[in-house]
Figure (cartoon, rainbow, N blue to C red):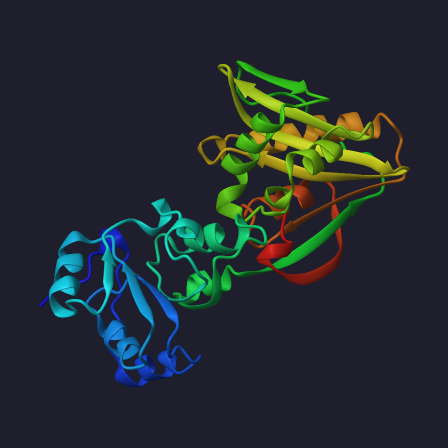
Length: 305
């Protein structure tokens, strides 16, 4: 008996009723199929009963890959690889229907790769995916929109030494994308990923857009971005910090220095928003520093930052 490996986030499907429900969601007769994380092959067996045209499975576990090849000889094409390392656009030659009982430890990364990073270049026609409830809860987000109508009292001291908070009016696109990804990938920041370099540059280099970066030992560890395109209202678009640097008071310090720059221009209103996919300390920080909620809404991950 093969036991699920926690290190690979494995969780095998065994309930035959659920397996039948899954394969009957769409008609897959004579379709090209990709199954991700087939495990012991329980869902694989049910898919084969539906007569797919061609059937690929991607299994990272070497032991399970060999067992699948043995059990389903000449019926499936087994790819022993990490799905995150595959370029699916070069493998199938036509759009595929995807089934996946996704490993809980990489579910969000896989979803981001397939839906967010591809923009509109989809190599599949349908995704039928199984997630743990905790992952499913992260696919939508509750957004809190906040406002500040007067200057707050700010503590402008840095909590640790050796830092430089530098305004960068024209950041290099490549460098900006690097810090955006490093900070935002864990929180489903997606909107800037969809933009071409030209579109992103038009936003960043707008005369009323301002990017300020936090540097430590020649490494950019965080950034803020705000704009005054609708002055006298100003908006803080991003307050981002590397995960390794959180919990040190740097987020509050960055926000305080940014607010000082903003209120030096005497706006009538400053707005910011956060959502339940962001770092859990974001909303309490914004409220503690003086922002007040004025609106709430629910969005899908494609509409988050």
